[in-house]
Image (tube, rainbow, N blue to C red; front, top):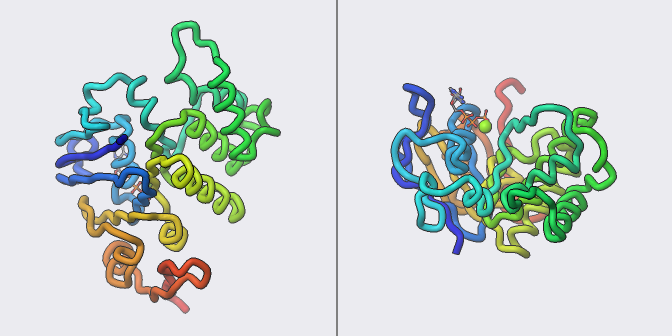
Length: 261
Ligand SMILES: Nc1ncnc2c1ncn2[C@@H]1O[C@H](COP(=O)(O)OP(=O)(O)OP(=O)(O)O)[C@@H](O)[C@H]1O
Ligand SMILES: [Mg+2]
């Protein structure tokens, strides 16, 4: 079974520790959502699980092997990441970017085979980007661009998918579409999903497991019912709220008190 875990991880930048001695395991075949205030270290943590940032201490194991001992290709066939602010250099078309998702499978000839082409078409179709295939990335709206990046991650066809705020820039329809797509990938293909999401209500609706970060540590983790409580919200966001039941899905629903009204 494909799994990823971090042992006694300390992560940070130069002299600054952002995550301090945290062990974490993302449940296999489940959707885990990381929540926490701006700057608490969600992206930092996700990036180190994708080996984009080396932990200061501790180890990350992918299927029982330290990721520091694996090649880039080995990692990127098992795990794909959508960073919070992805960038690509130069002018590139939608299709070209999505094709990059297939790089981990290519040999020295760098030619796309039938499977590659099928995965690329599927990714473009699932994100509703087929009609934009030949457009350049810089000619798209923020939301359309975000969908292309998601398509690239899908084309990579990995068992583990890390998504850092995948619904940022998306209008409400596409937010739900993308989360539904993630949900289907999890339910139908058994993908293990770890994502950062700021919307607590959608987090409760889609997550099997929620991890709340605060003060360099995991403050609380568990089911949405365990984690999204008045007490936890107060502690991690310094925000008073009521928690009611989502009328549609019966999951916890967060209703914040305003500080002015
Ligand atoms: N490249 C970097 N060099 C130095 N410090 C950084 C770097 N990237 C992030 N930080 C700092 O690390 C801390 C955690 O940042 P991170 O991006 O992980 O937060 P986050 O929880 O993802 O926040 P947000 O919700 O705003 O995306 C912040 O204080 C940030 O300023
Ligand atoms: Mg972030």
